[in-house]
Amino acid sequence: MRVKKRCDIQIWRASPSHMDHARWRQLTSLLDLAERSEAFKFRQEVDRKAYVLVHGLRRLVLSDMLGVAPTALVFRYDKKGKPQLVEPPHQPIHFSHSHTRNGALFVASTDVVVGIDAESIGTEPLDFELLRPYVVCSESSEMDKKNGTEASFYRYWTALEAYSKAVGTGPSTSHPRLLFVPDAQGNWNVQCDVPNSPEMATRATQAVIVRVAAPVGCEASLAILRHAASPTEISFPEPSGEKVTLVIHEKELTADFELTRRP
Image 1 (cartoon, rainbow, N blue to C red):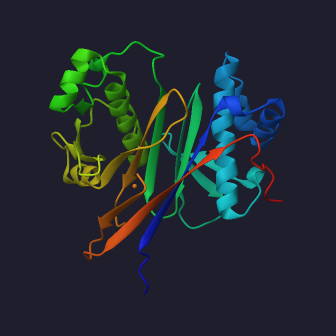
Image 2: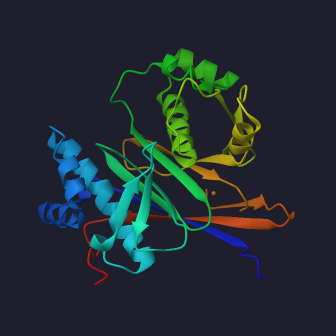
């Protein structure tokens, strides 16, 4: 059997500033009743728009990948809140999304499990103690703590959230703390401080965290689970010892993006 030598991941970015009133109406029309109801639970318009933007983006990208109408997609959530696509029937497709008031990110791949997180920088006071129950920071980041470096805090936080989404759990103090170990390309490999089980340790070592371009005013991280298969090209070994080149395609939803490409 022919072995695929390349792994593809799509990352889409979107910013509220790129959407005019007509585009907001179109995006809202793509959502199902449950999504619209959830959107209108937000008191602030900016939060409602962020929700509509990322869920509309999710429908646009997946519909384009699968060749169906955006409104034909049906989602459900597992017990831990991870979204799953149930209609139409398809081969496994892995996806994740994140939104803040400044923008939205969506990632999808048919080759590897993915998780993504974006956070707006400077919207909340920095508190590095929030990381302590979940992450073992490196010596260099200890210096960043003293200096109050935003980039360091948000990179750790988005890495933690992206990893949690990829493995299908939320950050929990019942889980072992994570260590993010830099590689030669500047990405982070993941380890458990004191793993609760061999399965948990193995799952952590399968992950790599990649810093990705985010909407203006945000920091973002992508988590990839390298079960067999990251910036533009990174090669990972397969169990056979062969290499698979992973290519990330970064795209942006703008005002001139055609919302009705599928019937």
